[in-house]
Length: 443
Ligand SMILES: Cc1cc2nc3c(=O)[nH]c(=O)nc-3n(C[C@H](O)[C@H](O)[C@H](O)COP(=O)(O)OP(=O)(O)OC[C@H]3O[C@@H](n4cnc5c(N)ncnc54)[C@H](O)[C@@H]3O)c2cc1C
Image (cartoon, helix red, strand yellow):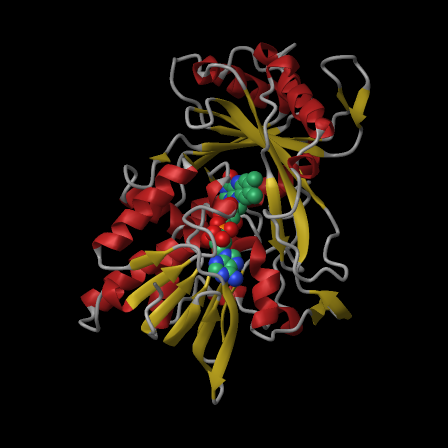
């Protein structure tokens, strides 16, 4: 049953909806303005039905964009505040790169130092090789000339974390209801006064939208522009699609996760490798790609194997279909295909000898998923129609657990300098985030 009224309605029970619900309940309590009982979270399916429920869960600071790094540093503090309930594994993270990325990554390292985020930067091919062999004695990736080793970050188990976050919110009095789909909103003056769902209407004072890759649909519900104008330097681009879809390719090698322990017998940092060395098939020796490629991987007991992924690709799926349902309609084949499996397994073997000949151990089951990205591939955190906070993370936001905390403060009237660079008007003002040489659209 849907109550007829609530002060705060949050749509989406993924990482952002639940984090906002929990932190908002604390804000209300600490300020003497109410409690979690003033908050309802609704979801058209249930907890973790979207991207959050399938995310590989990597938490890193490694971003070329200063605003992203500062935001991630804040989120890492939130992860560290309750590792048990957030199922957070602080094993660290390594960005391992070719020469073409060295100066970008070097500037990331310098700026990490400036904000006090602990990391180590190794330069030169010999030093990079010996650093990596100090961790994994079978490391043999060619063409690597730098390693950025972040000592914080790591990964978190998606489902366990969402359950932990939901339990924390519920213990503060928040009501979480599944199988309620928002179909529309009604206005009173300029602000939203009512939300229309498949099971009835609910009057609200404030609406928070955290609908992950369904943002395109919700954008339409909120009557926001499908196409926008973008200023980039001195140039203007007209009629740019606000949301486009990328396929995130991930999978699992069905082996004992312990096989990736370090030389010292410890669980290793998350490994991310980008390379411009041509990649050949580990199975038949055929060329897979001679363009820049990138992979990441980690041992993960939740996925029961070595889990990871490669760079996403643009599925160019906006077209006329404005209401694509990212998880409801696509077949698993669409999401991750044989090409990815061959590439990822061959890249693992390119990096470490222990993966040679292991393509047949790849676990053939649906994995990966779609993400909706803004024109510059970075998040939009902003208020629309006076009382509607939209959290649209451009689908690299599992790590951004702290955004809900900052959003809660903004809802209370405390503006956040960390969220400022992610306002919607940055596109028309030309305040875009810098672009790196990484093969990933969001690094
Ligand atoms: C395969 C994959 C791997 C990823 N790996 C990582 C990673 O390692 N690290 C990282 O930082 N990020 C990662 N991401 C990105 C990350 O998962 C997402 O950015 C993040 O989980 C989005 O969270 P969310 O709460 O905004 O949305 P979601 O988790 O997608 O939740 C949105 C919820 O909204 C509900 N909903 C949608 N429309 C409606 C409606 N009209 N009415 C009611 N409910 C609605 C949905 O049912 C869903 O449960 C990955 C994404 C994918 C797909």
